[in-house]
Amino acid sequence: MISIVDYGLGNIRAFSNMYGRLNIEARAVTHADELRGATKIILPGVGAFDHAMQLLQQSGMRETLDDLVLRQHVPVMGICVGMQILAEGSDEGQLPGLGWVPGRVRAFNSNSLTQGLPLPHMGWNDVKPKSGLKLFDGLEVDARFYFLHSYYFDCACPDSVAATASYGIDFSCAVHSGNVFGVQFHPEKSHHFGAQLLKNFAEL
Image (cartoon, rainbow, N blue to C red; front, top):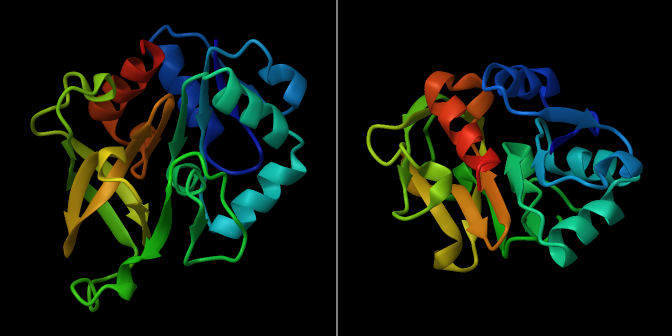
């Protein structure tokens, strides 16, 4: 069962609909009890880093998620701000992140090479996955995804970079550490590319 964490942020219905079209069982969960038995977890999110962390904490699901991900090693995929809160912290806020993937979220405009570029980085962009990752099966060449963000994940370990995209600089648009995955782009808005990635995650 794929559990889509509904803590008040993210287009939950879009993920449910896409998995429905793929004939893959998925459901939204709003309470810790509903998470028990999850075999895969999707952690969506939009908006600001601190707001996402506050809502997740208030949802009562944080402790159960830590147990599932860190101790039971259930595969999880953070999406957009759901990816950013996998980090230890963000330039956007004050609160600590989940810390499941070592690194920090940086502002694009903090880099001299990206200053002057329109923000947010919005629209379709090419994604270059690291070879050998099952999450990107069938997406190794010419994959394009939809982005909407002003911050990017700066991985502490180069091995955690799962894919890159370019916007003034090459930045991490997907991360991977053990059973933890994250993508900055929106697979639920990325047509057949996004459907393939969500299918791959379900089949990990």
